[in-house]
Every structure is written in C-alpha cells, then in structure tokens.
Amino acid sequence: MSAADSSLLRPKLLGRATVNVVVAVSVLYTLLPVLWLVLASAKNRDALFSSDLLSLGDFSFLQNMKDLFAMDGGLYGRWYVNSLLYAVLGAAVGALVSVACGYAFDKYRFRHKEKLFGLVLAAVMVPQTVLALPLYLMASEAGLVNTFWAVFIPVLFNPFGVYLGRIFARGYVPDEVLEAARVDGAGELTTYARVALRMLGPGLITVFLFQLTAIWNNFFLPMVMLSDQDLYPVSLGLYQWNSSASVSPEYYPVVIMGSLLAVLPLILAFVLLQRFWRSGLTAGAVK
Image (tube, rainbow, N blue to C red; front, top):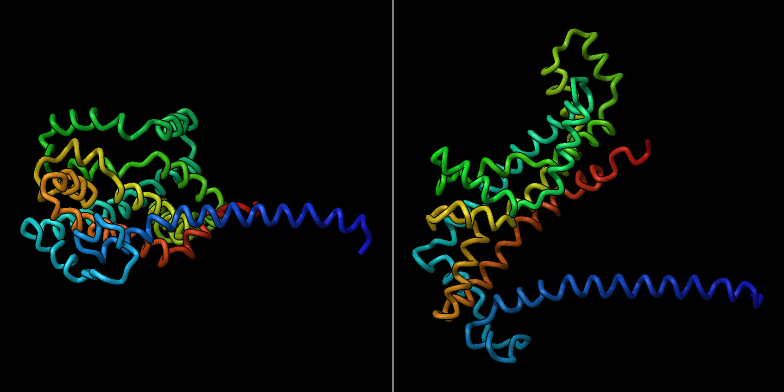
C-alpha cells in the first residue's frame, strides 16, 4: 500500500472509530437507567439506600412484586388495567381516526383543504400541556371531569397522526387502484375499508405505536382531570406513591418495581410490531 493510499485510509478509520464511540456512549447512556431499574427492583428497602445495589445479596424480587400488588388494597393492578384501556384502546381508535383523516386529506378534493391541513400542522406544534386547561373546562361543562371519558376522549385526536396518515396514504395507496375499485362499482366507504385500509396496514401500525407511547406516558392530563385514585393510570399512580415515599419509605421498593413493570408493554409492543413499524417509517422512500 502506497503512502497516498495510507493517508486516505486513515481519516476513514478515524471517522468510523468516532462513530462507533458515539454509538457506544449513546447505547450506554440509554441502557444504564434500565439496568439500574432492573437491579433496584430486586433489592429490599435497606439495600436501596446502601452501596450494595450491585451485589447478589438481599434479593427480594418476588417479595417486592407481592408487595406491589398488595399495597393500598391492590391499587397498582387497577392502575395497570386503566393504563391498558387508555393506551391500547385509545391508540387503536385514535390510529383509525388519524389514518382516515389523512386519507381524506390526500385522496379527496374539497374547499380550503390545504388551509385546514395547515391548521393541523399548526396544532402539531402546540404542547399538550397548553391544552390541558381548556380541555378541563370543556370536560367540566360536559360533566365528564373525574371520569374515564375525560382522559380517553382527548387522546383519540392526534394532529401528528393525521399528518402521518396523509404521508402514508400518498406513499402506499395509488390513485389507480382506487379508480379501479370505483369502476368495479365499489362505494367510497367500501373502497376505503376493503382496499385502502389494507394497504395502509404498516402506516396504521406506525401511528398506533406513536400514539400508544404518547398515551401510556401521558401524565399531566390525567393529573388535571382525575381525583379518584381508582381511575389513575400507572404514571399518575406511581407519582403519588413516590410523593408519599418521603413520609413512608416502604413505598420506595414498590415504586421501583412498578416502574419496571410499567415499561414492559411498550417494549413488548415495539418488539412484536417492529417489522410493520420499520416498513411504515420508509413509506414513500423510493418514490
């Protein structure tokens, strides 16, 4: 190898090494809190406040699990079911609504379409915490405060999901296929349900995962809307227990164990649906 080739190869190797170091640091930064959570969930209260977190002693994973579901009359199990209802059902219905709206924006012509879509894009930039107070006032007028519907209904409408739905409709559903279905005598609803919606499957899963993550981690809206502990999601319930831990230290192990169980549905959803999610993110990439 000549000196010129060696000088050209050296920057490439340095660049590759730099990228590998940055990726390794990023992975370590992401995984260390998860590793701490796994180790801490298996320790008793005394070990949490000592330097023995990495030791194999004081193993009480099963006891912490039992204490978690027994604490305060088994409230955590109720919170977990509430979160599944809010997140899974809400994300499923919300994804269907978002994709249908995005499909309508892409495939139909109507007055002021682009102006309305501009409002959708503007709504994407509005923080959800800003909307909490107006939503509370509207729910109060409707008599829905401190009910399941006060949290469930607002999460069904996601401007970012509508934006993604339009992108997916443009990338996955050719206009020629829709015209062929109409020529065969299919109505608009039949064309959408039997033709377009099947093609939008990967996009639907992608929107579902985004909304599932957002709803599962939703904290401020339930805190504003709910006062009944039986309606709390996991995020708000663990926050309440963590606030009580300063007075009652027995809450610390159950909060950590509850936090570990709270991340499992999201991990499971992304692992099971990652094939559809990856294909959905590349919608229209080759067009």
